[in-house]
Image (cartoon, rainbow, N blue to C red; front, side, top):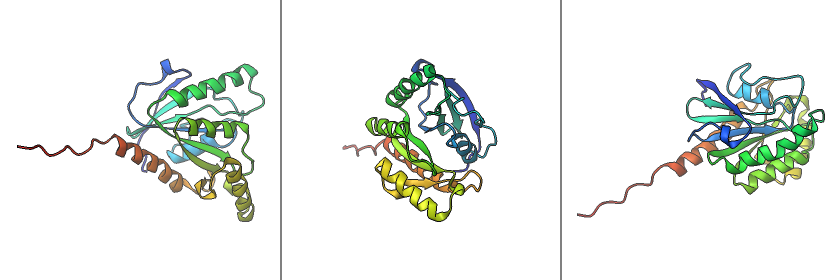
Length: 209
């Protein structure tokens, strides 16, 4: 996809504050410090659309961005960072499940995993929610430049096994080398095209004289 414009719309924590829109939404989710902000910035070819922070767990809002006027990119709060206050941790689950279950135009979630880490309980919970609410998961494994090719293969096999998916469902990505950019976009575009096909009106039946 050629990204011409990416514009911040608004932030929200509850349905009453979500932007009113009929455009399909692709959300991004993952543990704090998994490289979510870097992935988004590389995909839309912007250095600081989403702020990267040396303090994981800082973003605790749902942030909405318009991309090319064709779909909405949604940056979900990172999860699983130990230093986030307990009250914030308790809010995360209900806020995420509410968004995933009630947002009718949500059609896919890019679930981001670190190639060096085994998926944790929060990763498995997120994938479980996506399956329960019929939202297509797009599984992206980041920081692939941090391991050798042999190590990568072993880690990908472990991640796939823990998630209960085929290894072929995992897209490798590196913000440093930009490896995997086209592959991730292809998966996103595939989800968006499926939604467009479902929304397009059926051919009108021929009228009899």
